[in-house]
Length: 245
Image 1 (tube, rainbow, N blue to C red):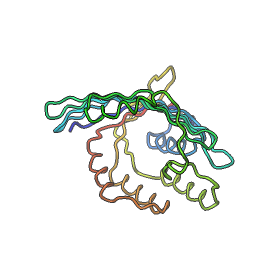
Image 2: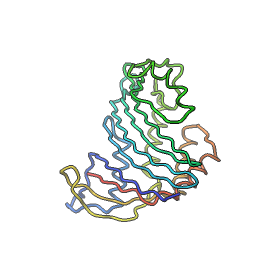
Image 3: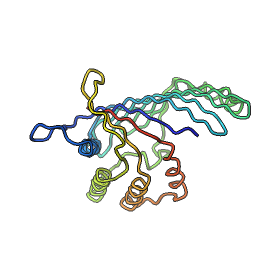
């Protein structure tokens, strides 16, 4: 499998100037960025990706994701809107399968809604589902609250203990060693403004330590074998280029 190189353009309101007016070191920039991430109350993210993987099979995937988050309400809920678009080609055993997906989901006034704008595939098994799927294309569907997994359900009736745990998880992320700085490229112009350009790597041991501590704080055990599988795949991530304004 090819080692992957990812580019992420992030826009965060962070002050990177020290009291004497000098620019902080890359390590300080990364630390302040993590602090800004956990303190975000509302925001919008736009992400595009192109992925090519080669092993016994070949995969070419293009995708885009947009996500907007509102502030947490007095009832402990957060409204959001997500839009995911994917298209890709997979080749295996001299066969080629093309699939496209356009999906939206929103949480509004304590209710969840989803809409499928497009779904197509040349896979014979998936094509059997198309007559049913087409009945619901471009129609908003409300999802029963009992069907929503707890991991994506907003916190309701947040207790003082819940808030303490959330604050501990945020601080754990800030202090984690998940990322390492491979190279500092200085500042560059991005969408008309100056941005710090850093090339980051993923630290497998730091990632493992963070998840172990987060699991203990959140009282949610995870699949150890699954975790090790994820960590093993981190070796294919060669670099993550991040631009921070």
